[in-house]
Length: 171
Image 1 (spheres, rainbow, N blue to C red):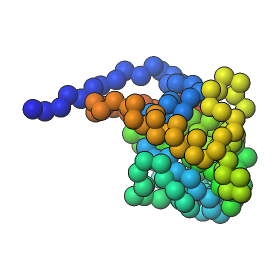
Image 2: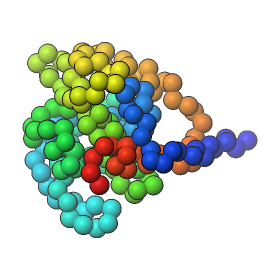
Image 3: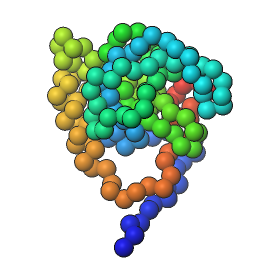
Image 4: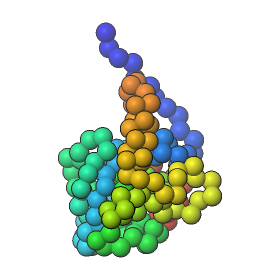
């Protein structure tokens, strides 16, 4: 018996809001806690050289990424991230755009303070249902709960998570 595969029609422009952990988890390929490393150069999907900031992963929530994860200059600027800072990143691969990004732009990155074991939401959205501040244990439990709710039905096409409408970042 062959499992069924769903093909989803996503709205255009794609903007799920990313106001909950469930929404962020649903569109994430990897969720990691890591330190932002100094800037480096990489090629984007069009072959252009761009500035990126590698993530030195300290912990993953779900599966360990088999590839290096980077943050774009636009994301660093928008979220006011600092090199050496510890953050939680909802990182996603966008097959429609053939690129990768932080899911939801600023909404998909949160500051982590190891001295207090606290996760703090960086975005300033008043519509967000993600707690402004919570313990790492509370955060991990909410991610695990969201992951357990994900459908087991394979989806043939992924949403355009790196589109400007989804990240609220300039293209």
